[in-house]
Length: 188
Image 1 (spheres, one colour):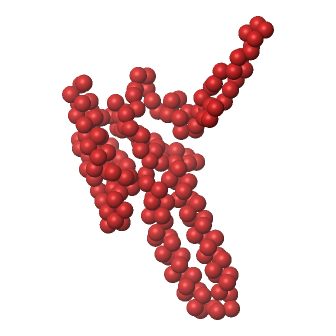
Image 2 (image 1 turned 60 degrees about the vertical axis):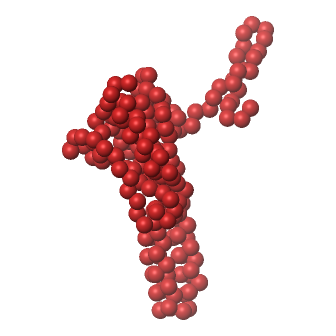
Image 3 (image 1 turned 135 degrees about the vertical axis):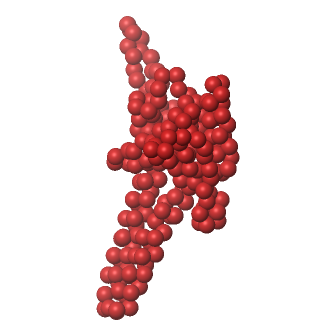
């Protein structure tokens, strides 16, 4: 059976294999630390995989410019500069992939949540009743890839805004978010 482990329970002379669901680290974090009793998850979204490339573009551009400049100034060590460049780019893409894995956006019937970070997870949450408005922001790169960022603006000015970055179908997700906020404020 895929996605479950089996534990053996002994009851007298017979043994039965009972499927026990495997808990992912994210699921464990959600159930133990984030969700309140009776809170329902309505939507779970991850950023697009393009997050890995788009969040690394500046680093990639600067690294390539430096590698080209170094290669032009010292022809003798061109292969070393090339290898160092590939290693740096691979490291940056690996780090961006870890950041992508650690990003999770959650809409419950009571709150909006963002979990980000692998080693030291940062949690942003805002009760639906305390959200003033949301809006879709799109950079030029996001427009090209049909992505967008949803900005969550709380009513309290001292509370920071939340961002759901580089998500696919941002207009549809923003509509679901606004519908859920309206229902929460209406008390239904």
